[in-house]
Amino acid sequence: DVKVTQSSRYLVKRTGEKVFLECVQDMDHENMFWYRQDPGLGLRLIYFSYDVKMKEKGDIPEGYSVSREKKERFSLILESASTNQTSMYLCASSLLGRYQPQHFGDGTRLSIL
Amino acid sequence: QKEVEQNSGPLSVPEGAIASLNCTYSDRGSQSFFWYRQYSGKSPELIMSIYSNGDKEDGRFTAQLNKASQYVSLLIRDSQPSDSATYLCAVNSIRGGTSYGKLTFGQGTILTVHP
Image (cartoon, rainbow over all chains, first blue to last red; front, side):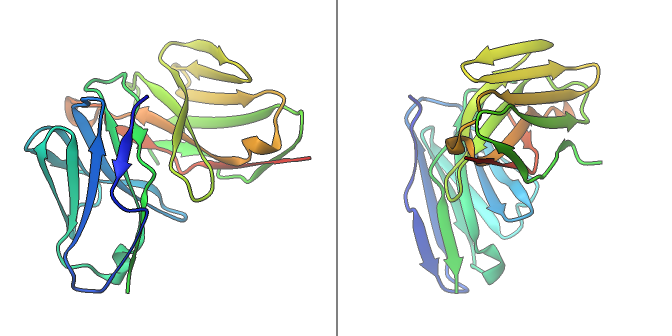
């Protein structure tokens, strides 16, 4: 079974802090994704990566950056956290290609105070 | 027009009935289609994938795809209260000519199965 592990289930941070969300997958997947999910807005893609050190912006990259130094690990960084970044953050991974489903981690519920 | 549209519901069905969930998509080049189930407070879980026109059955679940009509559906037979969840339709995105496995998700349909 695919295992996607997110480092924290719940996280509380303060405005202006630099926040790191970590995601690790154990299936040698090329693709990794970061989404946020908010009521009424659905899943929105922040960034994705299809290879080590490669990244592409998703639909809502503003205020975020990412890092992928190793194939199994994809980090989401909130450079200066703001209250409007309070959300559920979901990491997913998949094999490369158009027929591959994505597999999700358990999510991190992030609150910015 | 949204790229992937679902009826938001909520859809309420009695236990034992057939639940029918619908999804339309705008990109005619899309080639893979997925249904995810998401329980409240949990992450999405893949339950079905379909790539060719027609029906695909897996236990109580049947996915149906009609590429000409740009329509994909999920039928849940003998619905159980444990099927109560949000169901997300996802379609592979090929905007810009490349895919890399990107998916576009619908907003989800909330299903409630009452005893």
